[in-house]
Amino acid sequence: MSQGFSTRAVHAGAAPDPVTGSRAQPIHQTSSFVFKDADHASKLFALQEFGDIYTRIGNPTCSALEARIADLEGGAMGVATASGHAAQLLAFHVLMAPGCKIVAAKQLYGGSVNQLSHAFKKFGWSVEFVDTGDLAAVEAAMDDTVRVVYTESVANPGGGITDMAAIADIAHRHGVPYMVDNTMASPYLCRPLEHGADIVVHSLTKFIGGHGNSIGGMIIDGGRFDWKAAGDKFPTLTEPQSFYNDLVFSDGFGALPLGPDGAEIDIAFAIAARAFSLRDLGPALSPFNAFMIMTGCETLPLRMDKHCQNARAVAAFLKTHDKVSWVRYAGLPDDEQYELAQKYCPKGTGGVFTFGLKGGHAAGVKLVASVALFSHLANIGDTRSLIIHPSSTTHSQLSEDAKAAAGAAPDTVRLSVGIEDAADIIADLSQALDQI
Ligand SMILES: *Cc1c(COP(=O)(O)O)cnc(C)c1O
Image 1 (cartoon, rainbow, N blue to C red):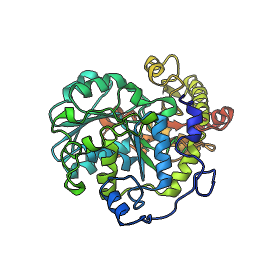
Image 2 (image 1 turned 180 degrees about the horizontal axis):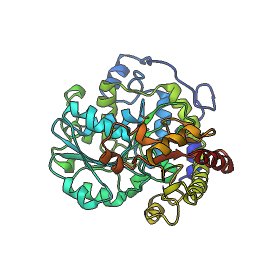
Image 3 (image 1 turned 60 degrees about the vertical axis):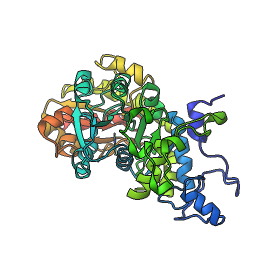
Image 4 (image 1 turned 90 degrees about the horizontal axis):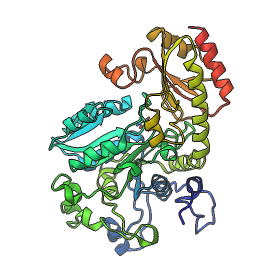
């Protein structure tokens, strides 16, 4: 019988160490692993046997974290990476080639907009940003060069909820996978694979690690996309790979008996992300960070409930404040996205949301200078309450139109509400608003 989420958040991927009996996940702080013999070594290199070779490609502490997050997301296999950005880079690297296009949400996190529109351009990958709240616009962007549709489940910083089932439907009708950044919601609040997504990526830096102390990322292969049915769109997965004895990944890893009770699962995408992209591009997660993030993950359900509860209270307080012009939190019953939020995030929409100040840009700058309990910084998902004025920081490089589209207009302030006492969080905002 499958166990509940909180049980799996503590136990998935981490049995007691069979050699030492160590109950906590050991940190395998080693760069490389001794081969049993020459035959073992050659099988590992040919992908005929799974095992660790070198920590850039895999490490047992990172594997434990990969198994845990894949389990929590309901995916087939995870690949840990050095950061959320590295997870995006590696996932796109499997799917893309020069001349191919990503259809991505305009509402993406500002750092992701930068990565997709500037860094990826040098690879010859193009991107078309669309308002994913407008399904006709998504449909209109689909052409033969598209290889993937990419959105967040809950958008950072705008807080908008993506209608994932509808977007998945469009991607699938055009024969391409749908990839979702589930950083803001975490698998406790939302599991995109249950709503049609094929691949999930995370910045583990945020709610999953949860304590603002470690950078990390994760790719989760949902194991359901039919790569062969997409024709010649994904040669990395469907054509013989000379480096690996002409292995075709979608054949070799398309139906392995690794699921519960020996069920067959497709891990071709995850293996390619590791065996090509991680191996050759190199942004591996450190075992120490994997340990920190696993420890954080154990309290994910407790923390997310508290983040949601506090965020609801803070949003309700701001709604009635005379210096606040609007509050955008889909967890409030009168929000225009409340129904969509109930469908995708019934337990709550998380700790991050935005609101507008009547005083515009200047008021935003004054507010972040006046808080005391809140930390003014560029992060979300910490136990501590965090505040930022996106227009003057994370989104400052975007045009006014792009800022507005991303939910980062000049009057907008983003909060990542922590797990302190709600009364203290509200008192701090109240005194800071008084100073405007
Ligand atoms: C922070 C963040 C990222 C990037 O993750 P890093 O770990 O900082 O590289 C990607 N997506 C979202 C939604 C984020 O909040």
